[in-house]
Image (cartoon, rainbow, N blue to C red; front, side, top):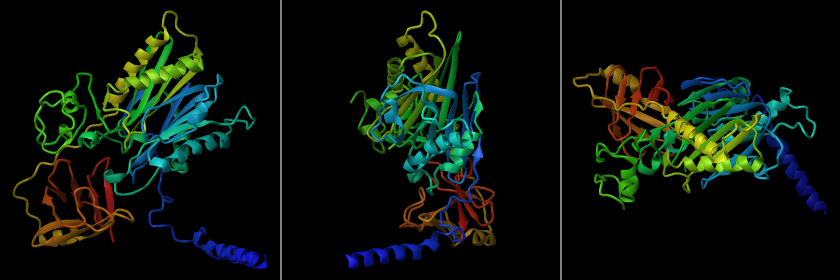
Length: 458
């Protein structure tokens, strides 16, 4: 026993000895988020509507980019949830599945950052407490529910995630009746269509409709494995394979599976770990069973606007909220309400699609001085696991990834030649637009613009 106590004492002593490594004045880890500054209520196209009960705030870390969207209600409201995808990430959904007929939900939080982003839902709950919205009595404990999308992988070169600081900034910036469509909030680095290799930029979408006193709103963050589908069956956004027919439709792609998923498929011959997280809000009073059926009906309808939908690699979750402000409108039965909201949700899906980057157009006859080329050369660090080495060889620039993985089309096992554009920009030809900018001294910016990735010369 004495030997055991001695061992435990030694272990505890060792733990104490290591404590100073995490002290406040210690150097920050290489990819620390401590210095990141939240950007709130920015980006996208503004959707406005009259609904004082519903306030919305968005936050992003531009360095990711990644973000969070917070929906806050004027009082506790009744909630339900429907989970369809094979890989959901959620907070407090099990409680909603108990279907108590008691308003409990204060906020719904949608976030990027995969599992790490779940921190945002609990952070909004503590912000409600800290800001005095809840008394702390057993019947007044703040409750927030939330879900995340996976916005890492090949689409960006860092692992910045929406954290407590960002979520609480978005919560405190929330304003009634304003939502940002496109690349904003939780949809800041969303992507769609990977099932068919599209890798199209996506975002968050919202839509609102009022029928008499009835108010309904639908919001969605579309990070789907499938493609967003227009009402006429055409593809809303995709980096098409060069071999595809010019007028290819979603029906063509679906009916020609599995061949249409292969590179080089070019024939329309007839039949043969992503996530969409959503919210619907209605001001009509509903009981839990009605609200649950509404969630199921609307979530099912989303398979029209996203094809395929709710796959094993998707984490699709839909929240349904009744604010209980009005009695059910006379003559409107539940299935009709569901059909109406389903149509509004399709509008929201389409509103999530931002303008896509254009393929760069080569410029003939460009000459770059040797002095300038030497200034561009160097090692550029994007994160602890991705760096890019740029070299000047014989009057031409080459790039090679030197970290743990490649940087888009820039491989780790070979050099890739960069083709000059103009004014300090280069590109790499291929299916997906890839532009490299050296315009800012000491930085390499890949795909400059709203989805840019920035590396600093070491």
